[in-house]
Length: 97
Image (cartoon, rainbow, N blue to C red):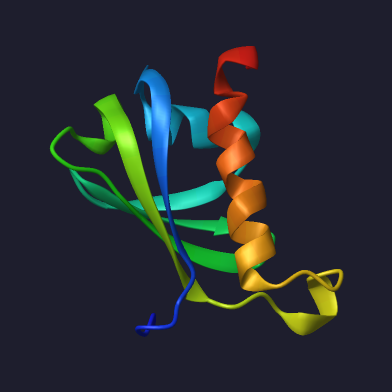
């Protein structure tokens, strides 16, 4: 699980977004935990994704935290922070899907 040194990023979305729907369209595995939280697997990294005050299905901002680092043999030399930053592009380009 995450610790105090886990990479975290805050994402402000261009508008309200249904995060599970975006992840489904982009083929990113995830599981809902409750209305404001889900866990996603992106390039072998496990992310904790939370929203507040809106529900995950109607989010305007996200907090994405790395819970588990990538599997070294599959990370292509990227760190958790690099992959975390890459994951935000999914939401930046979500309107293209």
